[in-house]
Length: 185
Image (cartoon, rainbow, N blue to C red; front, side, top):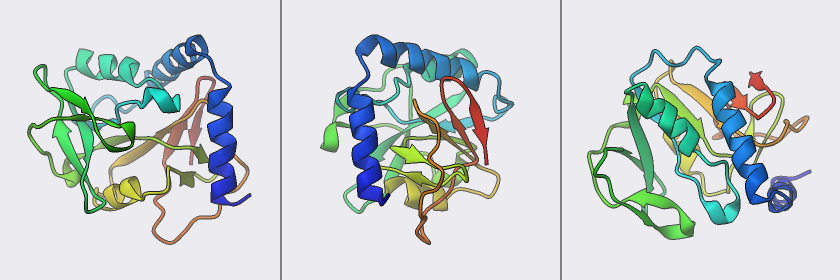
């Protein structure tokens, strides 16, 4: 299946989830994340969920990160195709930007190479850690700017595909957390 067909498959699968299923599965993903040995780091990047696209509700992970007093950065999509990483603080104002993405209005930008753990949005992924996003390349460019020690953790409601063809610029995941399991690549 090509990337477009896979995106369409997972858009349809997400549409089949109701609000309660999304919340239950999102909470289960956060509980799975607590089992990982990733909580000794300082800088974490996490995306803010697009509710209309029935993405994983990352608020549960945000509560864990804040409870552990971590530095949490959220993305702002720049016109040049790159992400800026804004430190999420108590007074950070969030607005809905392009593509329905919640983003900070302003704040302190943190360089990509400071990120130690990145929670990565995705549409689909495979048993080797290859992922498909929305097709704009924002996260592949960002992940390429991090250090060799940065952990890339996908979040998905679903099990992996057997295989996804990867392009040379695609950055594979180290882990993917689902409601039922943590996949290691």
